[in-house]
Image (tube, helix red, strand yellow):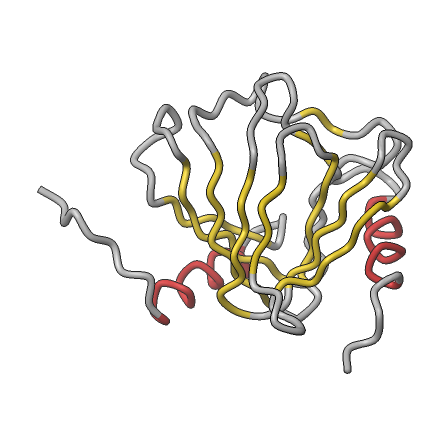
Length: 161
């Protein structure tokens, strides 16, 4: 029987980052929940700078999401329905360690530093058909213009002090 406790230690962070380095998406999860039907979903999300997550929201099945940075700096943008940035936050900078995003908010994240790792929690179960709605005003992952869109978002951040 597996242990009922999973430690979050440097070794686990490094193993998750190694998987992100090997991933074409430049990010990787380490799930603490046992399967996609579990509720809630709890996982580490390791990011490399340059990983693009298309702006999306969780509305069809309303789901909040919480992010707490464990290493590095992770930017999170909130958008209005027309794609205009209404808020931007850098987790891991100036004392801001985490954020809770309400269901239905358009948002995206990106690593500001070479690597970043966050602990993420959101309700399960996961169903790819209903999990997210992608923003119609932004490129999807892998589409032309995705790298440029991400670069524009990152350029809007205040310079690191």
